[in-house]
Length: 260
Image 1 (tube, rainbow, N blue to C red):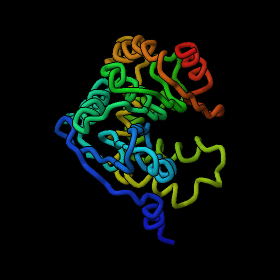
Image 2 (tube, rainbow, N blue to C red):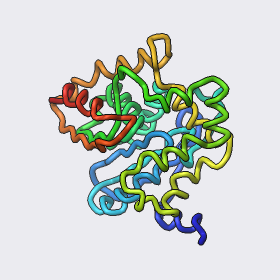
Image 3 (cartoon, helix red, strand yellow):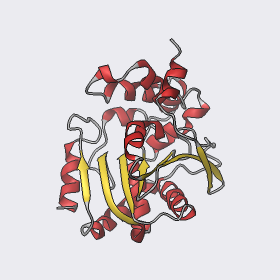
Image 4 (spheres, rainbow, N blue to C red):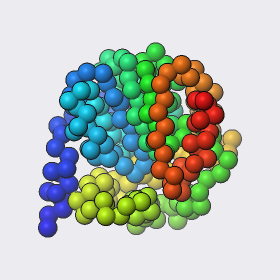
């Protein structure tokens, strides 16, 4: 069975490209109407949103962006691109500006929430409502052991970039109904991460998780957290998989505190 052909049939959307900060960004732009901006996490990409884009494009304009270093976007070296949350949020704001998006509904998952809410805090007038799923936009009291192991100098690089353990684990450890992870879906989710170089962004995302105040992203995430309360007057929908070992129900409770 040709799984490459299979996954591409699951993602029948036109690929588009835009330059953000000098780097090529891949995205999907389907439908017309109010814009829904879909921001994935790590190690997923716009393919993650395939079952949302199809049905909703009859009523909305769906824009699914591949963050730089992930998906079908350019995968620059760490010398060419910082791979920091601050830069990713700035990229997203540049995307919004270039496409002149207004009245945005942000739909974000995993670390896409930090990126998306970072963009929203920087340009609140652009955003009308939020749909947040198993994500964070604030500092957490602890980091899962599996994530910390991937940050061990030397070992993390070999494990994540060389052996592709992060992507493989994500495809096995984050699914409540394994029967839905068909070979075609598995192939589609993993397709952009087929070499050491193409997994640079996956590792850098893990390394950008701030575990203490000396990390460059710590203060950035702190600032995003401080800015969340301004959105209490806008609709916020929280959707949570309660068995998530990374973005546990603690994160849901924290969002409920912020958006009572």
